[in-house]
Length: 377
Image: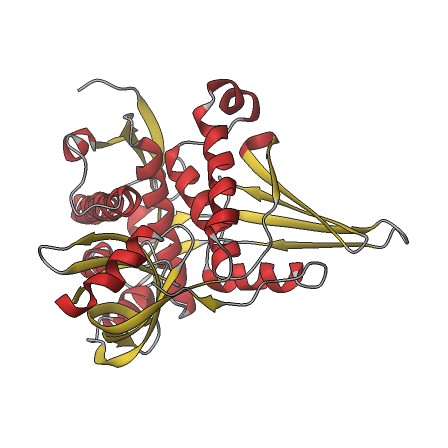
């Protein structure tokens, strides 16, 4: 198989069994489970991005993780990834897995990119642990991701079946299969789900798909609701309407400009813009701020270190936001042109709906946010 080998992960095994850089053969199933889990999440990342049900041809064959050596420390196996056109998306899946472990330990909502059906695979990683042993998949300065027997027990508790009930769902639409009467939706948590709809709702679904870049679907639906993660699945759409805090005339040109940065090799090289995975994240993030939070259309520029810079001028305030596509963080700044008063704010995990709301609330102190309105057929 062609392609260079890239450094991918260095999970650290801590405990008496791993002293002297030893990795007992009985714990190797944890590494196999980790590789299988990364593949499952990567498949979801790719299909979500492509707006399809199946992964692209050749993806499964291109996925290859290899164990190179046991590094210094308690026991640190070095895992390599065979480079391919999907490497950046596999690396994105790795971070989703680490974020999920951290969220489980903190009792938080799981990342939207993590498929709930993969919780059983995540559980397999911890079955090799004994006593106080741990596996550290990610260390500071990033958010620590440490797997322990406590993590395993929490996972088992979280796998209790969610409740099915009629509730309100707010989601972006990314695809539809009219033959199967199935609609693909991205919930406000970022989780991608599919649900059925009756033939009487075909017109609504058709409109939602056609306007998917600048509207959202507010629907009453039969949904699966978890006590921690909220809505985690949709069985059937019962009724709905398309809504937005922006318009096609505003969102369309912003997305066109964003895409032009990535389509220019010169711009990508000069500013170090990242690969397709972060590009799609940037589209969802900036589009979400406008469509869901009512943030005005920004003046948009590429910035150094693979970032995007958004600028606004309103009522004597020079407002800017720099978005790190690789780190998925937002750095905000406001300057009064009359008094030189300044204000700064930083938001991590900027793609999360709660973080976008935090960004919008901060921008709302200096800009006018648009209200949500319904768009009739």
